[in-house]
Length: 208
Length: 242
Image 1 (cartoon, each protein chain N blue to C red):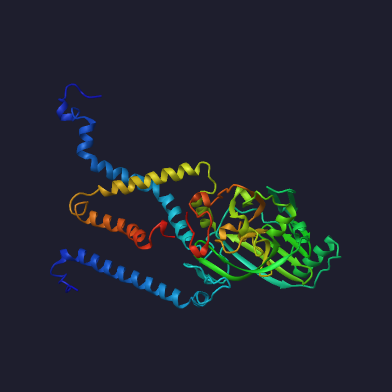
Image 2 (tube, rainbow over the protein chains, first blue to last red):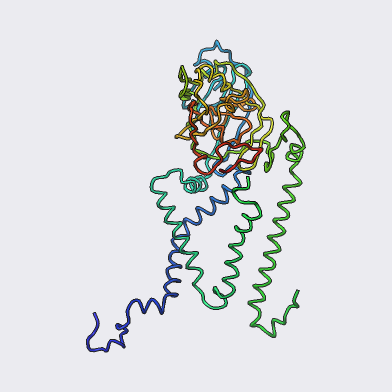
């Protein structure tokens, strides 16, 4: 509470919040930009690293490391009972008890938590397929694709709004030649020219 | 290029000169790396060059425009099914006289074919001459007795994924319900245990983790089609986006 003994002008109480904001808006902008920036670090890491990973999905699997191995064992006839077929395959391959077993046609499927083994009884061909999740990227990609939906949609929307604030506030953080009067304007124009130029040169979405 | 100033004499210039040098070196390094990468890619892409010179029986170039040949399929993601043959069920329904459901064993008992089919991903890669084994969709359509009003086929997959294909394109002899690629079972990331295969359309039309085939009169754009991808997806017309 203001001390009535002190004149209002000395305390600055006479000034309205509006006046304060008008005089110090750039400082407020910078302060909020800084704190929003801190908040955005985690999500930016997720979206940027996942974006890099997914952009190059043609060249690698951004979610898993996978393997496929072929082996050969003695053929297992269709007349061999299921239990005996499984026992024969496990003994020949030196593998433990599968989580589940399925037999159809000449195929014997042995399912494990981390791999699948398919034995082709007629030929004795065995194909083992397995994979291991890339710890960080699989989770980041899942978030990036918003596969889980639910509340993540709101998180992603909020992040998009925060990014818009960071971009917009960044324009006005510095005044003078380093700001929008020269350097800032030049770099903003350059940045905007990249997507614009790409759309013009490629013909855009309507080109094909 | 400007001469280097005497930084000992004018130390106040050191900071901006160092920054300028750094920026110049960074730009040169980036350009060199990009050039090297491009050269590496161009020089190493014999498969694409060879495919571009080939022509199909129908007169189209073997490689659609904007595609690069890879040796193997790339996993492109998607909401996976459980991948197990024992839980596989395929429902054939819609505008048919005799809707039915198949399990994996029943699928293997139907007449099997093995076809060589090139696949073209909308993201720009193609795999040529892949050998796919399975059951022609036409066989399933015949078994179900598709009604004359049917015009489109909706492929249904795990977690509600769908994609739409014109009836005539789904019934060509190389359009399959497939479970084997190059003599091996499909891996989980490529749609195990069973996926659709619709040739000559971008590969997202070949639904992975297939669960159903529905024949309909009115078109029903699917998961990607309502998200901006082309409704038809002809690679030779580069129908990537709608």
